Every structure is written in structure tokens, then in C-alpha cells.
Image 1: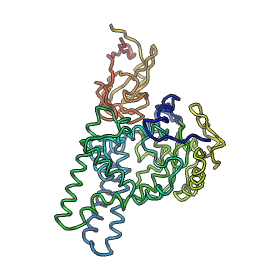
Image 2 (image 1 turned 180 degrees about the vertical axis):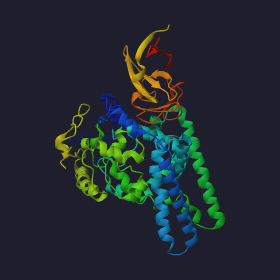
Image 3 (image 1 turned 60 degrees about the vertical axis):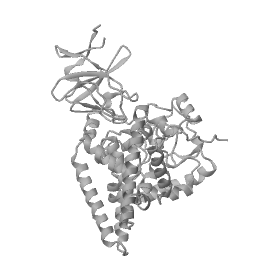
Image 4 (image 1 turned 180 degrees about the horizontal axis):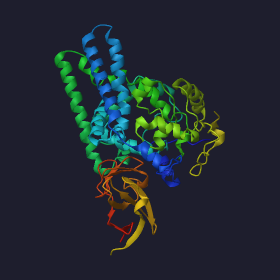
Length: 361
Length: 104
């Protein structure tokens, strides 16, 4: 019988991952000539400044609509737009600016990173380090702090994620705990000691802003301040979950080849703007230095070596649903997608791929 | 004690770029700045074992290809999370079209 996975970052799976060389391993990369990669990695402020201006104008415009139409049904479409911009598109801004690839100018990355972290109720220090770990040990059980759907999958939890309730329930108490100076053992496992005090300070600043928002709401006798700050994390988070879940769900774990554990999905232009092209997720994990605006070009360059991208989110969810159902009974089961004939074979030296456990495409 | 070794030819490194140089079981990174000057550092990022030669050179900065940690390759200074430990630098001189570094 398959052994249960231990997702703690200081437990049995952690020890095994380190002992077997899965932790901090060398990962497979598609061959790309240095000259080409250098061109793709080039930074520029232009695209991110343009997108950030559109983002800010849309946020302020929809916020103004909420205030103006408050108390009428006309407020609903404005809340829909504002919620997604605040509660979902902030995730991709957090992500890209955390990598430092969105803008060429560092302070621009830092400013947007901190604003987006606040919108997401994420401690900017803690999450910078957790994301570094996610890239070192992508979907390595016991090492990766950002595995969204663990095995066996909790489908109710995954469904509730679309409402933001569970994330809200996790994120806010976490920030409160950190603001009181307590970091969990898992957090301490990936935040270096010299950075831990910064995580506490950041959590305190977030708490100050939330306290001020609540104070203003009470003083005005209005829900509007809370609808604009904090609550969008509930009502606007669905798009982040819709796109983000597809990154790794149902694919292999404990492998060192992103083609096995990460998914690229073609999406509509609006979702790609909200998601800042992170639908090209295999490409991003393989080459995190490439800015979001160059990912479509990178995709064209290396797609001969990757499983065929899902043509739509609908297609991807339809593909993964039976895999999740089967994982309920047999958690080692996963989706192993076929590579095109032009691709190099999947990398297997760090792991013994149980092909019988893999679902054929 | 100084130990000068030949790392590469001047033309092996493009302007504002970096290459890898292995010697005696050690790995170094050789940089050519936009001002056409040469510099050398340890070849691995101080955060995790990633080859800096696969990274991106921008002005005075080398960005690690794995987690985008940034160092000033001229001074070795780590410029913030996720890199916290400075990079070791090595003296460099150019002689007859060859880049020499002191690994002693």
C-alpha cells in the first residue's frame, strides 16, 4: 500500500527528500542557445509600466464605481471587476515583481511587490522565501511550501478555495500570529534567521493598515472601507484560484523535470492580462529569468520539447478531474502527459517513475 | 599567495555578459562589463548551487538564473533577498588578449 505523504516541511518526507537528493536537485532544462536566452531574459520597464498604469486606473475606476453606486444593484459589476483586480491580479503582480523580472528597475518591482502582497494578505518577506523554495523544490513533498492541492485531494477544500474563505481564514490569522512575533516551524525552515525579524515587521505594518481601515469604517458607519480593503480577498479571489490551480494539479510530484509536474494552458487575453502570462507555467519554471512579456516567445521556442499545452482552461479541468477522483482512492496516481516525438525523454534519474500509476493522456 | 591563471580569451566573453570558467575543481564566473572591463567571482550563487554564468548581466549586476538573486559582480555585494551572503571576487588582469584571474 502506498505510504501517506507528509506535507510538513520538517517531517519524514523532508528527511527523505534531502537523503535521496530530491531536495535542491539539478532540474531538466530544454536546450536554448545562450545568445537566444540572453535576448529573452532582457529586462525592460516599458511593458510593466504600461500594464501597471492600466491596472491602477482600472482599480481606481472600479473603486470609484463601488463608492458611487453603493446601495444600488449597479454596484455589483463594479465589485466584480474591483474584486478580481484586487484579489486575483495582485497574485501575478506579486509573483512577477517578487522574481524581479516585471520591471528592469528594482524599486519599481519592490513597490508593486509590497502593494500586491498587502492585497493578498501575504507576508512579503515570508512569501518571497517560500516562493524561492517553490522554485528550488517544485512539488517535492516535504520541501515545497506552495503545494496547492495535496494528495489525496480534498475536493471540498479545493472548491471552497474559489470563494477565498479558506485562504482568508489562513492568511489573516497567520499575519496576526506573525505580528505578535511568532513564526511557525515550517516558516522558520525556509526563512533564513537573519530575515525572520523582517517578516514580523512586515506583518505588523499590514495589521496597522487593517486596523486603520476598520477604524475608518466604524467612524464613517460604512462597510465601504472594508469592501475596498481586505474583503476583496474573499469576493475577488476566484480568478486567481481558477488559473493558479492548473499550474501543478493532478501532475507528478517528487520529480526533477518541470514537464512532469507543471502545466502550460492557453488562455483568453483577459485572463492572460490578469495572470500576466503565467499560463506559460512550464516555461516560467524552467527559465524563471524570462519576464512575463517574453514567455509567449519562449513557449514558441521550446514547445517541441514540452507536452502539448492544454488549449483552454476548460480542457485542462476536464483532463484533470478524473485524475483527482482516482487520487481519492489511490494517491500515487497522476497524469503523465505524452511528449511530442521531437522532445527529449522525461528525466528519471532522481526518481523511479511508477508508470503503472500514471494516467495516459 | 597570488596564483594567476588564464581564464579565457578576451573575445570569449561578450560585452555585458558572463561565462563559466572551471579550474582545479573550482568554478568561477568571468564578466565583461558594459565599459569593457573584466571581473571575476565565484561561479556559484551563495544562496543555492546555481551557475551564475547562466544568469543575466545588467550594468554592474549579475542575476542568478535560479531565484533571481542579485549581486554586484564588481564588489561581490549581495543586493537583497533571496541572496544574503556576498560573492567572493577575484583580481583580474588582461594580458595579450587573455583574461587572467588570481585564484590564490
